[in-house]
Image (tube, rainbow, N blue to C red):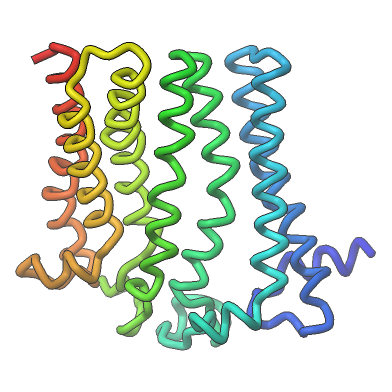
Length: 265
């Protein structure tokens, strides 16, 4: 049994036999749970969380494990609709010929959404208050969901190699999406909640704030759109690095507007 577990851990999703898919999905669920339990454990020890917050973290890890099992066990359906394999990697880039597509990577990133959301929720409770926590709870899933809805934007189009051709590597765009979700989107939701509960802000201004940062979020996780707008090739390392000088100010917009709401400017 131990040997089968190790073998399934080392096996690529697209190489698993159909009759072993459920076992493979269970193994992946366990692996994701172990990873996020370790991260959650560090958070618990570092922040000395109470039992309720520990329970929230555990719920996030449990949901991530369930999502992992669901997605990995439904490989044939996802492969039919999105295409999970891509052989456009140059020899030497990886150790095998059949590799996962970037669309498959988007699905795997989606698995992490519940656990990460629960972590931000708990940190919001610890460092802020219920309104801050709920804002994070609503904001953090947005980049994951938008990337899934726009999964075809990440379809591999070029040969991937170590010479600068990276295509639209999903993790790079998720990073900026998360930064904008943590700052702009969460802050805009916070202003809406404060307005609904306590008043003080203009509701229309709060809604316009949310719409603006949401559109920024949509642009950040839509590299196909950015590639048409920017005068350089976003599928290369150099092109992406140039885009960083645009993405960073865009992410800062949401925080800047929040400072205006708070009277910091």
